[in-house]
Length: 220
Image (tube, rainbow, N blue to C red; front, side, top):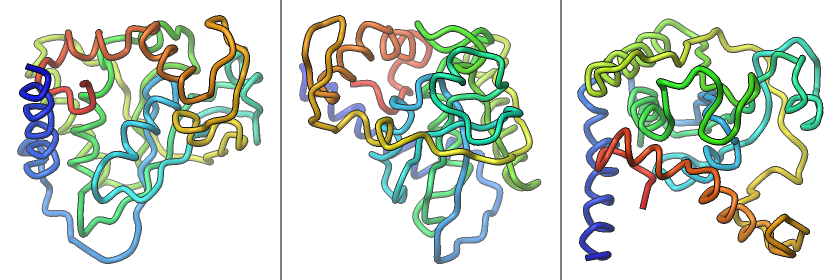
């Protein structure tokens, strides 16, 4: 049963990447690396999800959308900076397109929630797509339009103009695979194990599965 579900998830992820859910915009394939910026709640989770996607070379956790230069994590989560927890997704457009990445992103979050994502509430945890040009905007809008059609619910994830992106400190990068031991409410754990406990307790995968079912690309 488990292997069957795993195989099904692999097929879904491959289908989303291969087909871009029918929202390709004739993006020109080119060598080199492009960058997209998205916010989907806890940046540890978005980073982990997208570092598993073929064609993505790196994902960097950080902050964007606010008015404070080079903010700290504590400043952002406290509120008042206007920043979102966000990620930069570095990808090879000859392997995967912006349209495909936006399609995957929308199905990895709750785009119907305007108050945050999952257990994380407040402005810094809101979802958003940040775009740098008209082609990205068109691809992002198509992904959101398709999501609204599929869910039959109002999509509240906004499309915003990209601005300065401030990487978070090293403590937060690749959090999901770090072996350093930290003290958590679950007791001493490695960051990797603490991440898994947090993600489960926050209900992220449960909610994504409820919304998207087998179309959720990163839920196992």
